[in-house]
Length: 338
Image 1: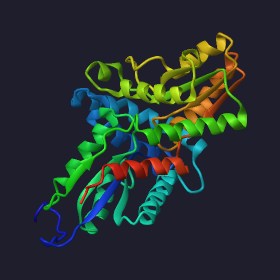
Image 2 (image 1 turned 180 degrees about the horizontal axis):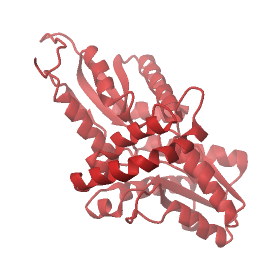
Image 3 (image 1 turned 60 degrees about the vertical axis):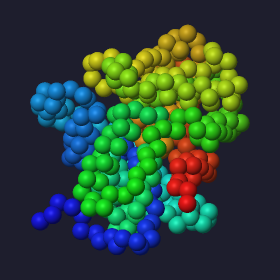
Image 4 (image 1 turned 90 degrees about the vertical axis):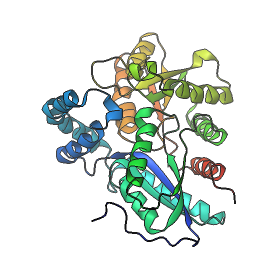
């Protein structure tokens, strides 16, 4: 039996253009079993750890997957909704709004959603595009700042799956939009709206998901891209340097990650007498465990515990109109010109 797809293309026929939206993913349920399956897939990705495979397999299956799923499940239970995982619910809303926006603009594109880990997978999304007989695929990973562990991993999986297509489509890949004007304006507007309602803080923190420092030392541009985003937004807000800061969250394991760390910075600021802080997480296109639980719950409690008075989390751009407009602008700019 052939290893290649059985979908039939006829040379000379008009082919559709597909847009593949990709985000990180989510467990299917807030249970230890679902978390074990999800974390097993996520942490097995060589882009995530870059350790010798045999050694990491022993650590992963001998220690991590025996302990972490139960702990993680308790955290997911705090944010889970009646509709399911917040990240997946928001991502599906983004998908529908982008489809509507393209239709209103008179563009007949096939848009699908895939998660790098979990369901719907990138394989599921590409199969949907293949059934629609796309001849061109624009891949839009919903990671504004490039990192090999996120955007690079998405490229790995997309191209791995395309190896099973007999007719490989023309491919375009958006690997970053850290400084795109529409994205910067959407972030700026989100912060300004928050401040109009609740007032300005003493300090604004831009909290990005961390990566091991050795990744950055080896040439990963992620830190630069995070700083680029923050600097552009701070400039739009006309903030002086003492009123904003870039920090990094969600570190895992004993090795050094990008610093300064979000949690330690909050402790230091609280002890220095900074009473009111706002945090925004520009690296997340949709709210998820790392924002709704880690920042809005854990970090808030930490800040208050060490003497801070108020910590406000500014939600991710999610399915806000300006975010959808920014994503549509990206799609338009990278579209094929006839």
